[in-house]
Image (cartoon, rainbow, N blue to C red; front, side):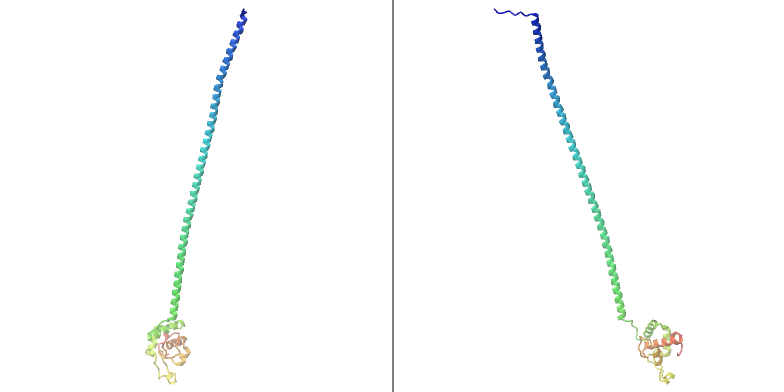
Length: 242
């Protein structure tokens, strides 16, 4: 026959304690699981925040690098443009200076050419003057003018009027006139020519550059003017036989 267990007051209390302990354990287990879930969620959120901050920083750094690169590119472009502008200005200045220099060189060349041509023309004129001496008419007017030019070179005084006046009195303008009646003729040295000069006087007062012929018109006038300058100061001062 089974043994009958008697449950006493003590047994009841022990049982109640065990039940309560089990409940507490179950509750503790349940509560711990509930607390673990929010912690994991918090960790995940924190990680996401860290990742977000890192991404934002990278984006900011990338943007800053792009802005720096853009600024550098703009600065390089500006520097390149400034260099190109300076080069263009220098080239324009050099071209302008070259144009001025070319104009000066052309002007100098033209001036030198003109000067050379002028000098050549002057030399040509001088050669022509030497090659073609002054021409005089072969008459009384021409003889007097040629004599006056020679007298001027030899510093022999006298004027056209003085020569012409004395010639007309002495020979009437005939270069071959001969006085065959005066004392000179009687002595064998007759006066001859435009100004009636005797041979000894002609020989003594002959002017170089003229013919050595007593009856040559120019030689006769010039020698007579030279004699009159020596004896009377000038042919202009002679008004009669001399």
